[in-house]
Amino acid sequence: MLSSHILLIHFFKPHSFSSNFATMTDLPKAMGLLRTVFKNHAGKDGDPKSLNKKELSELLRAEFPEAGSTSKNELDKFFKSLDNDGDGVVSFEEFVTFAAALTVICHGE
Amino acid sequence: MLSSHILLIHFFKPHSFSSNFATMTDLPKAMGLLRTVFKNHAGKDGDPKSLNKKELSELLRAEFPEAGSTSKNELDKFFKSLDNDGDGVVSFEEFVTFAAALTVICHGE
Image (cartoon, rainbow over all chains, first blue to last red; front, side, top):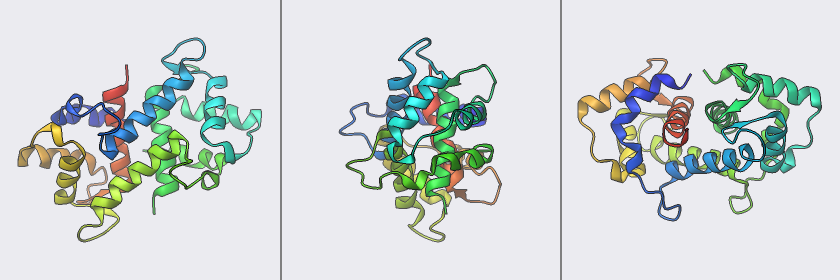
């Protein structure tokens, strides 16, 4: 889903931007935060490169403490909708796609 | 493209999370930063809800000062690839999709 942009993005030599959080501009900072959130939870058990259902549930509780609890059924449905390729885990790309969709929901006009 | 998630996302009542940047957790903070970057540049001239080519170019220069300059031809191609619906401007959703793709490029394994 995001692959169509991947080729062109190389124009901007992303590796060239600062990795020092203090001096980062906002867009690289937002990108870095998404990676941090994913890594903090994906690494807990099993494969550090993907989120299982338990890790996703803990991520959501940690990141949205005010959003209230989610039933098992809701979480199952939600997990399934994130797991685009149906391999039973949520990859970094699938997580970023969720974060992007949530951003559009919350901040789009 | 992001619409498939939009329905399920309402489970998490996103409006319930803190809007105070200092107390925000990382995921809402990243989402807020994406909105800030977009608004800072989209509002410069014309429609404050979309980026024209000049605004996009300024956004990229401001956010990736180390990425070097981009030729007119490169910018035209890049702008076209972001403008998914071909309406001649980059919407918030199209911008967030770009940011998500760049995040996967830079931070995905």
